[in-house]
Length: 209
Image 1 (tube, rainbow, N blue to C red):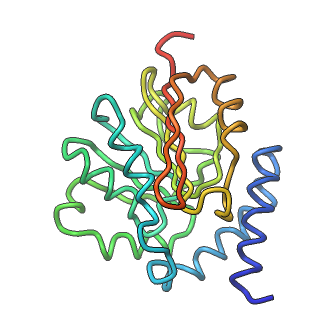
Image 2: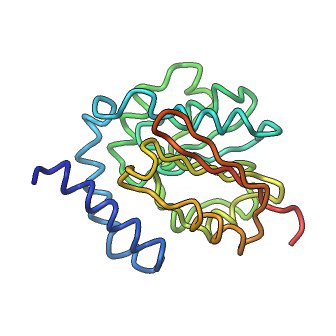
C-alpha cells in the first residue's frame, strides 16, 4: 500500500474517532499536522478538478452575505478565497493546523484576495476567537468540532460542510450524523447540495435557543 493510500485510510480513521469522541483529537493531531505539512508542496496538483464546486454552490445559497467568515482547515487557501470572491465585503480568515499549507496559501493569494483574506495558524478544536464572532463557518473536507463551531458562530449565522468526493472523501461525516450533532446545538434550516461527486450541507444557527 502506497503512502497516499495509507494517508487516506488514516484520515478516515481519525475522522470517525474524533467525531465519536472529540477528546481523542490529541492522539491524532500531531500525525495529521505532519501528514498535511508533507503534502503541502504537492497539494494543489493532487486535488481533483472542481473540488470546490459543491462548496461554492452552497455558498451561493446563503440568504445574506456574511460580514465575517471562517474557513476551517483551509489548506492552501482555496476555500477562503472562494468566500472572499463570492462576498467582496466579507472579512475572511482561513485557519489551518499545518504551517506549510498556510505558507502556500499566502504565497498564491492574489493581491486582491490578500487584502481581504488572512491566513492564521490554529487548531479547530480550540479556536482563538470570541464567542459569536463569525457569520459563516465553512469546512471543505475537514473534521468537524461541533462545540467550537457553535461557540464562534453568531446567532443566525450559517455553518457549511462540503465533501469534494461525497462519501468517498477520506475526511467525511454522514449527513445524518451532522444533522444530529447540529440539531442538538440549536441549528435548523438544513439544506443539502450535490455537484459532480461532491456533497454539502448548510445549516443555520437559531437566533434564540
